[in-house]
Image: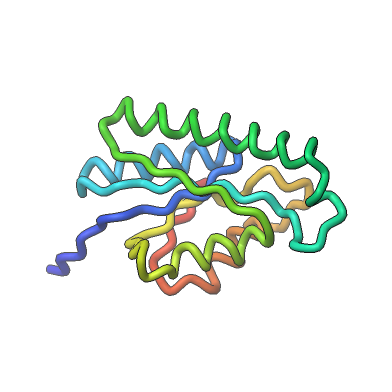
Length: 144
């Protein structure tokens, strides 16, 4: 029997129903393994975007991130699961993989929704999910 311990779970969150279902699955797993969850919110703002310097846009996405992460934290805490949060700006898939592979973080698992809020729909998976699945060096659980 393989004895793989799951200590830390990364859950990308964007407020979509799929990301909430992924969080709920991560909470269930975290309870079984006494693992911690890190909820990650990333906005797709490129480094040299003309919007980056706009205070209104920055404030809005930070407010949205806070709302989504606060809700996720509430769900985790109601289930006695430790929850940490991380916000990022830039390419979403790249940010998630960079965080997932960070040696200081040492994540055991990524649990994510199959499709987020993106207006562009791919045939089976969202573009971020697809990217993460194909580039992650750690296991990825995709929740529909």
